[in-house]
Length: 534
Image 1 (cartoon, one colour):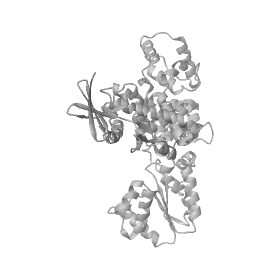
Image 2 (tube, one colour):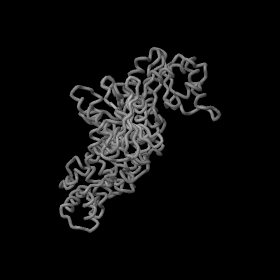
Image 3 (cartoon, helix red, strand yellow):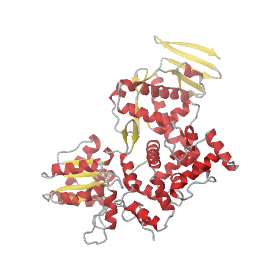
Image 4 (cartoon, helix red, strand yellow):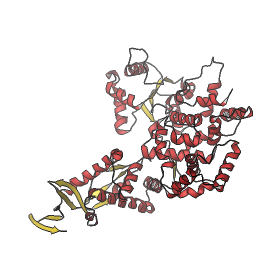
């Protein structure tokens, strides 16, 4: 019987161990608690949490630990409960009530009443949605607490005896050596796969191998131990986080690892074919077999014709050799392409995969990351990167607005309306608002605000995400957004609407119809009219 597979199952979000519960000291089976303790990685938020509780233990306070389901609120509170229970009462799950006929809001009323009648401080693990609901619906007996929540929500400030620690202030991605990465996810993958007797996963895996027990779970674990694959998984999660605003929690990442190991496909395919959780729904959209390049199309065509490729055979044989299993085969072209992609930045086998490096280049994502880095740490030497972005968005604004009359763009004329069949246009002076750009300090790597001026007047900023950036690049190459771009294009069209409001006040208006241009100029309160035919 396998010892490894039951451990894999404990990583699932449906496992009873997915949500932290304090260990039962009377339970002689400490196996599950051993796994839980082994996977523990101390985070910055937990360090700050314990420092704050130590600092405040001699005064009476409420500490709200705020986060989403799966972030690890209960685990942090539970791990440190024994150290602080002399000074703090704890309400771990603020979404639950104490009685069937009681709501979560009413339960919080009871918790706060008990706190006010007690000599001890209080720690509450709470979802931000429930916290804000309490500010609206909680009892006015606790108006001081409701006001403190409102103040935190609107001003991001603590009150004198009510403190907030929020997971949103501790992003899972950070900037390291000019790259966006995640130390937390890297560490988690390393902890699960490291070759150590202290690692229950690796220990069980090795025991199964000795007993000739080798299933898809074992194959996938072997693949997960490969550093290039770990690095590519982190890069992929960075991409889906930036591009699709993918929500990531510790529990969600552990569930992802469970799905990758569990199969039924090889991990290389599971990463792009499974849709068993929300993360994988988005990694499917980044499947390298969706890339359309001459190199990849030729490779697929040759595989369909069973063309002999000795170098490919050597690559496959050497790749399979350490595992003593046929992980890759020549008749699985999609799996091979995904393998080339996952190892694209690293050495692998005889490096046959390097032939396809150019096929996987994603210059727009790289440009976006460089732009984020430049904005995050604004310096004069970064100004050229930022200026280049503002050239691109200006070009996209004119290209999209003037799609029916592209010749207007060269004249810096902007079409802002159609009235009775007449295309209405005006000169547009569009520039970056450098003062706001320099003074805007990025709080997240997910997006940034774009600041533009129309005729030297500032307009409302637009939020630029990776998806928006890619669409701007595509528009500049002639692409016209469709229904699949609806969410992104709505934001872009809001920007154009803001520009239009300013342009409409121009003293120089053009009306174009049937290749004729009618120009109205307001000079000293006199209207000059000119007609121009193409």
